[in-house]
Image (cartoon, rainbow, N blue to C red):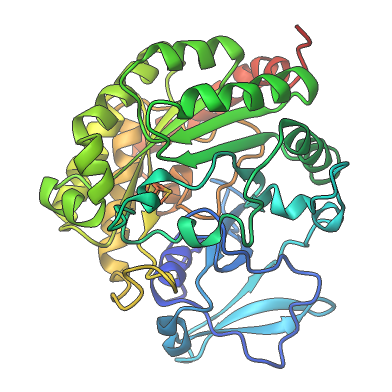
Length: 404
Ligand code: SF4
């Protein structure tokens, strides 16, 4: 039986994809090692053939060693179209390789290549705004063990980004790639990260008019979140990563030692109480701790009115975990089925904002394709669609520049 698009997405995250040397990727987005190294794969869009959503975007592992053993192989060309073939003779799946935007190679007015300021990850623009995450500066380093940010910033990514560089890149991404959302990320910056993000948020809201998300480690002074909400931040995400305290301390030593799990959850709860339902997310990595713990994390996040985003563990080259095995697809299916189910039961309105498809994680609404078609599921889908239409004018207003 062929897999549906979400099942294929999960299988590809867990098994990777082979790209034979004779298959040309010319014109496709380059493989960019930015943002925890998770952008190290090939961006693809999988048509679903389903009324639930037309396409699933993902970033498929292609360079890690496990991908060389994958049963999946990319075939075709830009002219003829691409497919992913299952070499066990099971199926052929048509896919689309999103084009690399022209603005990637344009310079900002300070002569920085725009792709060193930000890159598309799915349909949104991802920008790492701060100096390298401070967990990398400890001796020995306290970085999260799956992460490679400390090895990417200043290499694939410009080490310092001026507000003007960011604004110019956001303009290009909005005007030429139809981007609606910019996601600022910055790792651990002590108690200064939120404050440092303010000028970027203010400038994008005033000059460009995009939805803005922020992902930093949590800070104890929640007044920082209030200030950013006043500036117009639309979304906060909190990378809890692991729910089991021992796994959390083992894989994320810096977060465990300096912040603690409770601060992630408290900050998430606070922001969820201040923003509309579904505007906050809790990010977890699936495929490391026992599945039961991941399911508990999903329930905890959704019960706060936030949505869980699941990052399928990738043993990224150059990370401390590059020799670890990737997860089993069956475990990840269980996790994703639970994400959708928890969002439905807790009435978290997923997939409302226009044109935000995230390729590095599994979007919660991708997992609708895994759900059983019960009356409760269908009622949730109708509710989501009604809300999406009702929310259009609100998002339209929030995507207009607001000079102050
Ligand atoms: S907080 Fe962890 S995952 Fe995030 S940038 Fe720092 S080391 Fe990497």
